[in-house]
Image (tube, rainbow, N blue to C red; front, side, top):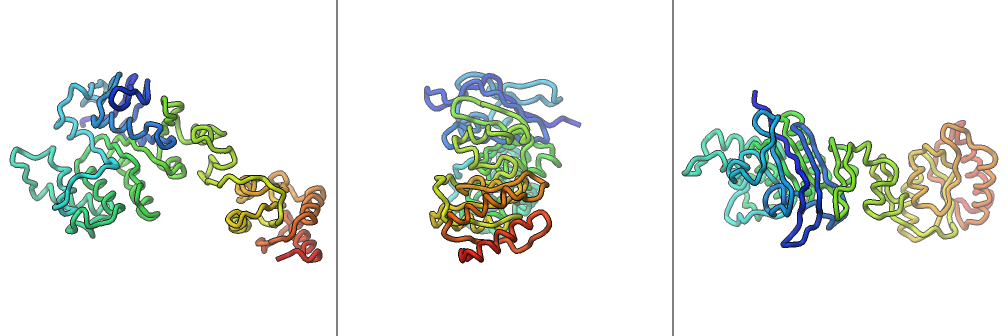
Length: 371
């Protein structure tokens, strides 16, 4: 059985006109794997992808595809356009000119690399078109004009077009742009299955870091000058590297969950929130919207809302994970309650390890501050 193709770059320089944007780009994606580019806007992710698909000329270095036996490499610059089209498909942010075409006809253009001189799709070709549209939940717009549908629907149609091209390498620039939550998950699930089941090599860019860490085998970090780091999601999303890449405060991004928290100035708290197990998070966000500085506690350091509290609250009273709330933490929390104007207690369940929070609630009630 013939091996599927992979893609890699060697010393690749990319840019526009005569300006090099990124230099020394070294990437490799093998069949069955998903490689995701992350980085801030304008860092060069799309420039890399456009160079891989020959929309932009490489300004140095090479883009290589594995040969038919999977153990040799071919320079893309030596391959014909039709040969590349039978190997590589792309879904970019630009849309094709298709004013008078139905969505089904647009998807059908993905079959052109396989057609003869007449360019007429046969029964088997249309079957592949319909299967691709079903795969990305786009069948309901098959007979509608391409410019009569929403941006999100057009995104799904373009992915169907790439799928029915039967590529061995799939290049996608922000494939979840314009999509609502349901279709983001559908699209990324389909991409993951295409890689796994059909052994397609996938390279794409994503802005949603929480999704990137869930669907990617490898992640390449683009910082505007080079690929600053490349590795598995577990290697990339540890410590403070991603925060440095995007130039955000360390507490504004949680590398294990992908959660984002708005940066807030740590002013003297006016409200104390007694929370835990996630109960306080909606209150934290409401107080942030209202621009009210607050304190939070008492929280264990492994609590569901610990990271949100650290990012959003001016002060957090905490105890070590798996340990009971001690007298010291209780007294610190009471002192903060004395300084605050009001206390909110969204927490409703108390047990042996958070009994001190029940004491705090009763103390706030006695002080006339519980709201």
